[in-house]
Length: 196
Image (cartoon, rainbow, N blue to C red; front, side):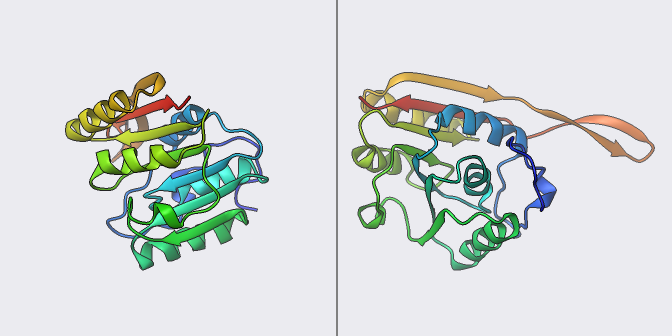
């Protein structure tokens, strides 16, 4: 078994990757999962699922949950499928489609939404919010100033409650030649809000 533990935080190198497709770094995933505030039987939509790190982590943590991973690229979908198989996760449905156009085809409706990318980000948030069940949470990540602004503005316009913004600044110990140095992981912002 690749990850025999009951805690999140799978090392990045255990995931299969596809060149050019970003992978949510382990430390950022931990913050993101925490912000989702999952229940044992949550229904999660992961929009822009990339390599499938979030579906795998949550699938292992909450095996009774329903997870829908949305990606538009068939090659990337195969990576998600492969990573789910590698970790023995079987509660993930992989959906090929472009956000937000595909949202009306997704069932069941979510009580948790994770948005890890996509354009136009503000339209994706607005359309996802319409389908989010009352009492649900939306969590989105931003790695650029533009997306930070658009996500923040979108949550304000949607009158999201209990909005939180966390900036993750992570440094990892790495070997460079004979020396150990701390190398910075690209900073990420994690924004979350609740629907009432």
